[in-house]
Length: 139
Image 1 (cartoon, rainbow, N blue to C red):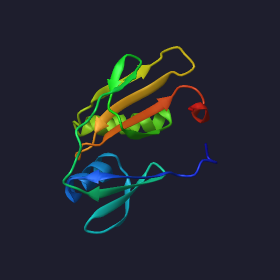
Image 2: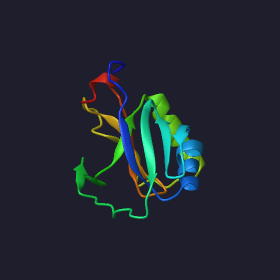
Image 3: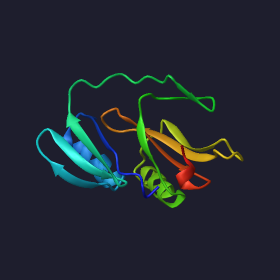
Image 4: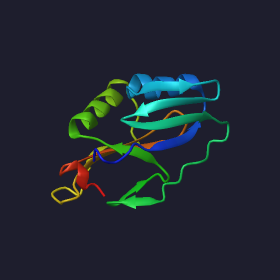
């Protein structure tokens, strides 16, 4: 996967303080450039930008994956199992609520994966996953 360039994703945030606490303190993402209306973060090697907004849309749980409804749209990252477990431990340490608790999908199959869903303080759904097989074999 080292040949895949980092992505950039922008999303809405309600305020700087809760966003900084969540992405910086809980997830451990390094803050980059920022100003009074947006914040950049290194999101596990990718760039995400949170923009201030007072128009946060309602969530839609229209996705059905392995019999579980998941929020669409959502974004996230595919991690090594070690990094996945570190994120899980940090979320649990901070008593952060899970929308879908850490679980294993498709157990025993080629597509077996560890996955968990959370919603950031501004209402953005995030998925963290780790594949049991080769990381580069995730698409």
